[in-house]
Image 1: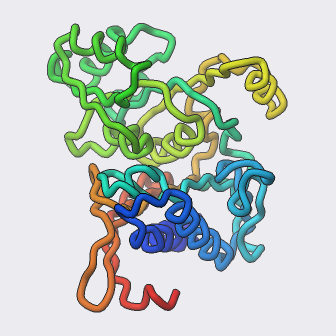
Image 2: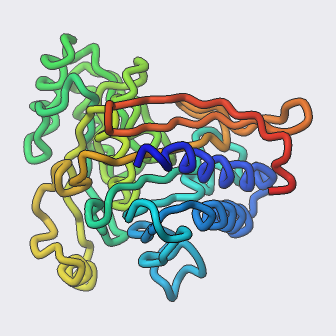
Length: 315
């Protein structure tokens, strides 16, 4: 996939630029439509044979980038593609931090086709990869991460989404003497924070969307980190949905091989508003600038790319 690596950075840059005019304007549908249209248009200019496996919804729910949609010009690599053109829609339209445009890709058949439901997740960076167990109590995992990273438990920082369902997790972390960093939205950014090794966090835990979980797993694979997860069907209909998609035991733990089985995958994210590790779209002389994180599992390459777009209004 080396031949199309930078093309994927262009895809998220296009979505971020299209979202920029909607920052702080309170119009979720318009912002999401702008990002989605721009991402789809750029994907369809690429020399790939792509299939959306995680996208904007089912065909009858989404007019574009729906699950199962074919994208690309054909030829080139045959890819599974997971997209979130506007990760953090609320963040964008309220002018808040941490919204991004994001995409992940792997060879056909390598990404988990996760139904859109809740997923329990735990994620760590390279030093703690191989030392976590989603079925173990949180204090056990915290001690394992501390040992693997050469820290005391009370030196750990744990990322948790600020939701009522996570009150017990927060209490547990604080009872262990560690620090909590709460976030409102932006699951993908915060779940890969530990793996970036920028001193942002040591561990991510909590319940969030399964599509975001798979996208994050690709980034973690590229960075040498680890995610473990398990689906949480809320009712019989969601359980049957899992079974119909080939997940015969929806509650079983999912490791990296189940989430993204390929050794060759890529991830790109471009900041829309200011974030943890990405700057938002900015006005610059004669145009706008973007800041993109581009990851490739082959060679475990990590690139931060700043791009000036002088002709964005014509694209």
